[in-house]
Image (cartoon, rainbow, N blue to C red; front, side, top):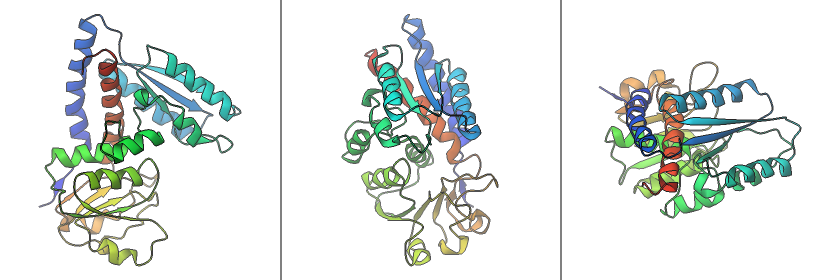
Length: 281
């Protein structure tokens, strides 16, 4: 019977630990850990995600600083706001909600975040350090997946892993994290030729392409570990899970698998940033 990689269960377990660590910080009269969230424009989905992150902070006793900016702001003005937060000693983590309006250079804005406060793992420098196995905060979704695989003792060394998706904050860092754990990694995407054949070789398949049910169940071999990092309004992921659950060795449900681990990892890394700033790590 397949192992359910339950991200909701692990996130609740982790929050208990985070709460204790926050209490320890407050008991020593240190400032409360603060995550600054930047929302540009009025996209309803982005506003919901920012609200969820603020609620997660509250659950563990942390504070969140909401920065809401008009969608007409330009790249230079947004970078100035980020630099203000970089200089603010009370802020331990900075999150720029993706996506920003099209006229803004998102990569320049991401890279303006101080790496010590890059708790969402979005800077080029952070990606480079992580890839080279140097200390850095990981991109939250792939790092959340790695934490989930570790919790359920899923073996990675020597395994064939196929990551479908190449985004700079999901597919690419996911591949590097798996490679760093000695998996043999193939990166694919929506334009890859012979994709079903490549996926059929995978011991571990990660769906991160952003297209509902793009990866068909009959492409996946028996006893594979199936990780679905997608979530769509249809309440499905990037993988057609129905036909593969009974044949997999382990899988992430949608919802309740990868999603909760993303925000949980953001909170964990903000807490770690605060502890490092206070010399408690």
